[in-house]
Each structure stands twice: as structure tokens, then as C-alpha cells.
Image (cartoon, rainbow over all chains, first blue to last red):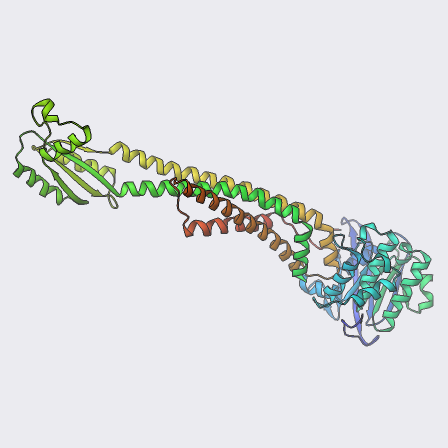
Length: 229
Length: 283
């Protein structure tokens, strides 16, 4: 049963992710993120929006630890990420579902093995049944793609596979970057339905987009990234 | 999880791994043969140097009692293990056996003097000491001549030194070559694996697990090359034995070194090639 690996959280009971006064400059000069703060409660859905080029992908990279902010603090469950060891950061990422331009796809194995690896890492090496993998592929309309290498998938299918990998591990937090520009309308509907399903069972969602209107029906909190002067 | 990734890494890079193990294995075979040969030369020279023989020839007309007196004093010299007295009659018998003819028939008399065959234990003495003893004995009025293989001893010294230096240089060169071979493989695998490692880190795999997987593959390559080198060396050793050639012996120390060196080098090559990239990009 997918979703049985991570203990459920109590919705919106406490702040799970906290970004406090983040600053990041490109090559130390041009500011990309300026004094950005945001709190995401456990089980909360947040849409962070802003026009293209404002720094959404950079923010996603900072949150996932791919980039180090020049200043500011990121904490998860009250613990500072910058003060955490590499192992502790890995354990946090293992409980998240990250989908962004920075592909989590593993090109040395089939699409099915990508999902299996994703679940296995989040469950600390636990056994993964074929049913869990199958249900993830079916959920994202990729049932016929399971045995293929990700490199032979279309860009939309690659993004859907990343979503399937994140969805299959029932994460505490989804970090989703540019979902709407990577997917066509049909795939986007499929993806939103699947993410909503996880949201309803307790996953927090942090969605970064330049088209916030697409997510208005979800009734999630909307936060605009301020323009950097 | 780590085991799965290690096995996948091995499966996906099987050709590189085997090819590297083969090339490094052949290099180590050369090294093993050189080390065995050097060891054999050292063992041989050491055996020859353990005991040296000095011949002391007496002057014509020296009486048997004088020979016995000198013989007794020689026995008291430090390092002397045995003294065999040879009378002119015994010497003549030996000479006639070697030459196949009776010398007295040719010459009409026995020209050979009394002599002593003096054996020295060379464990605690060197060539210089032997020269000193030889000079002292030669000064005795009864002694006509003293012989010992000074040049031979000197050559043995040179041979064993050259052999040790040559095998050391060869060992260093082979180690350097093997290091490059291992590092090349690690760099190739890591450049191919870079995107996968980044993906795994983003999925939450511990950096240490990724690191250990890579290190395991490198160590396995080292171990394979060591086994290959030992297998080839052992086959050659058996072949030499089959043809009754003088063969070096495979000592336990050499076997352990032949196993540890390739594995150690593969480990160093892995660490030196910095195969696991950082999870954090610079801004």
C-alpha cells in the first residue's frame, strides 16, 4: 500500500518548514532572493508565485539544499538545516518529494527502478512491492512506460515520472517547481489530482509557479515572491 | 540501499571494471615477477655469503707439525667454523682425479704443498674482515699463499644491491601506472555517474552511502587485479617448476603484499580522484 512508509502528520498543527529572511545573490552581486520569509505548516498547501525569472527555481534549490543562501535560515521541524549534518539533511530530503528542473531521475535504471529506488530511500532500504510501483505508474498514466529508461521518455513523461517518484513515497512535504509549464493541461490535471490526494492524507505542499490562478480551486495559501529592486 | 547501489554500479560499469582489473593485473604481474626474482637473487646471494671458504697454502718443506700448529691457531680465529687439513698426498689424489692423470708420473715428484681449507661463517663478518684475516695469515713464515673469492664476494654484493634497487624502482613505476589506471576508471565512472549521484542526493540518499558504493567498486577492482596477477604469477611459477628451472619461492609476506598493494592503490586512487561531487552548487 503506497503511503504506508511515512507516519502521517497532524494537519496544520505546527510549522514544519520555516524560511527566515533568506538572501541570495548571483555571483555575489545581483540579488535573486531578498529577505524572503515563509512558514509552511505540517499538512499545509502553499502556492508561492511570481513572474518568470523572479527566482522560484533558485528558491526551490535553496530549500532542497542544492544552493546555500548568503544569509537567512531554513529550519525543518524547528531544527536549522544549515547546522545539520549532511546525513541529517539527507534524512529530511528522504521524507520529501522534490520535483523540479533539477531532475531526480536516475538514468542508469528503468523508470520502474527509479520509483523503486525513490521509495526504498524514503523507507530506509525497506522492501518495495510491485503493487506500490504499479499504482504510482497507473496514477500518472505511465503504466506502459515502467520498463523504459527515463532518457527515452518525453519531457512531459519525465516530469510525470518525477511526480510518480515523489508521490509513491507519500512525502511529508512536496516541493514542486514549475509544474504547469512542464506539463500539458491533461497531465497537469492528473498531477494536481494525485498531489491533492496526498495533501488530503497529510502531506504538506509547497508549489512554486508563475500561474497561480491554476491552483485557486485548491484553496491553498498563496504567497507572492516580492520583486527584487 | 547501499548494497543495491553498489551492485548496480558494478553491473553498469562491468566492462570498465574488468578492463581496468585486467590492465592493472598485468602490471602487477610484472611487479610480482620482479619482486620474486629480486627475492630469489637476494636469497641466493645470502646463501652464498653465509659461508665462505679460504684456502691456505703452505711453503714447500714445511713440516706436518708446523702445519698442525698453524691449523690450531686458525681454528681460534673468530668466525672460523671448520678447518680441513690437506696433506700433499691427499691434494695429489684430488688433483689426479680431477685431471685424470697421475702428476707424479709426469713430473717425477709431488709439487703440491700442505694446505688448509678454512670455512668462515659470514653472518657477522664482511669481506673486509676476511681480507684482514687473509693478510695476517699470509704474513706467517710457514704460509706461502692465501686465497679467497674476494672478487666473487664483491660481485655478489653488487648483484644483490642492484637487484634490490631495480625491483624497488620497478615497483614504484608499476604502482604509479596502476594508480593512474585506477584513477582513470574512477574518473570515468564518476563523470558518467555524476547526474545519478545528484539525483540520489536529491532523493535523500546519504552522501556517505554514495561514497562507500564508489569506494567498494574501486576496492573490488584492486582485489580483482591482485588475484589476476597472483594467478598468472602462480601459473608461471608452476611452469618453471615443471621444467625443473630454478624457481623463486612464494613467501607469505610476498603474497600478502601482492594482495594489499593493489587494494591499497585502488583505495588511494579513489580518494585522489574525488569521485563524489558535492551536493551543493555554488551560486
